[in-house]
Length: 164
Image 1 (cartoon, rainbow, N blue to C red):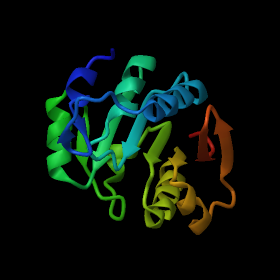
Image 2: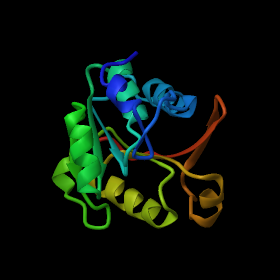
Image 3: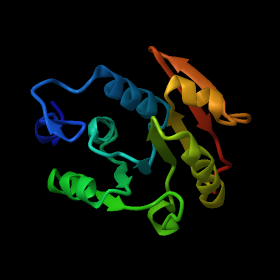
């Protein structure tokens, strides 16, 4: 079990849970670690109360700085108490200093209205953006120019930026 997972597994959608986190989150972490094995900094946007992917990433990529952001101060406080580097941030008015130097910014099931904001942020700071949308959100979003990756039951979209 990864460090920090013991506390995180007690929560699912903000409520105590005796179940293990869905394998879905682990699959995402493995895909990210495969795509970015030498990443120095990875940020999850909109982590909420499901930190399972980033907890697994900390184990898979021990040399990378893994950061969680969310608009909900309470969720950020709870993650900080679990030892997760987490910051309050609003993707509609992002603090770009948080994201500077990131190799990858990702979001799991982001609302379709924040996908263009993620793309804009990635373009400004030179980071790749990876989203794992709900299937119906992929159809409502303009994902032209995004690479579609299908692996291990996952469908993700990756917008690669030129390296700094």
